[in-house]
Length: 326
Image (cartoon, rainbow, N blue to C red; front, side, top):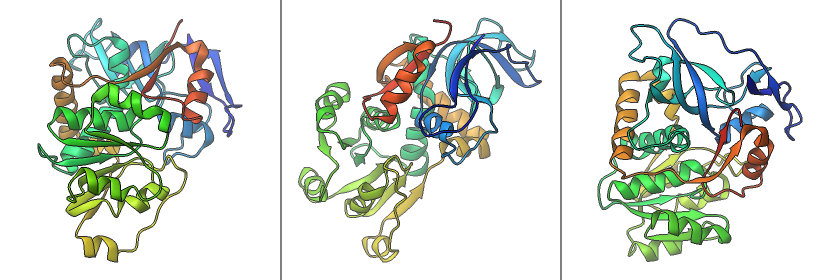
């Protein structure tokens, strides 16, 4: 089978190649899946460099997230051959077949194709865990979403809009603003540069943001501490800017806001019942047509480098989806 293997760690993808590999063996509790689509996430790129908090031993098959059909499963797993499933694990998705723990999979909602299903799970689970599970998002609240051209940021924009929030989408690239606005029609799309607090204050009539969702970090985080309303929450999702920010604790004290750390995958592993409930709610919203993942491009797995480089160069608005075997 085709599999995208990380043989050595490097900053230039020099240790990554598409190889012919044996099909994975299925352990008890795992589901063998024929992969029809698999989506690229920022941690996949970081893992090729050894720069993510989870550091799999090399060599490993890349890819966190997939959609496909069940080939083989335990009788008591709740899955049967032919079931359409979505989900994944920390690695293994960028291949024609993958063996995934059953807890990491759920059925694809009716009306959702493989590409959309592969693009939905991790991004929307992260957005839902942060906005709803940890921050108790309410209808009518103001939500400032950074990194709004990336998969997770766009999922947060889409989900917050679907749940009745007022959304300010923020991006660092002027050329992406129009495309973000066309996808999900947020209340505004702003540039996250300089003193953007003034723009947030203007848009919210001085109320500022009840929730700030930040996958970017660095200077964006620094300025976001000025954008949170009293009693609000600033959600730390990641550090795509490359700099881990620091904050003087007098700032949240004086402004009365909370800083919330978000690790959606770890949250679901520690609280599996809540993880299952989150996945079920995302599936329900998708089946009702209330959320739809943004896909920038669908590529055969043979063109994996194009997708990885587009992510590294910040060219994307939405997710890259690979189709193994093509």
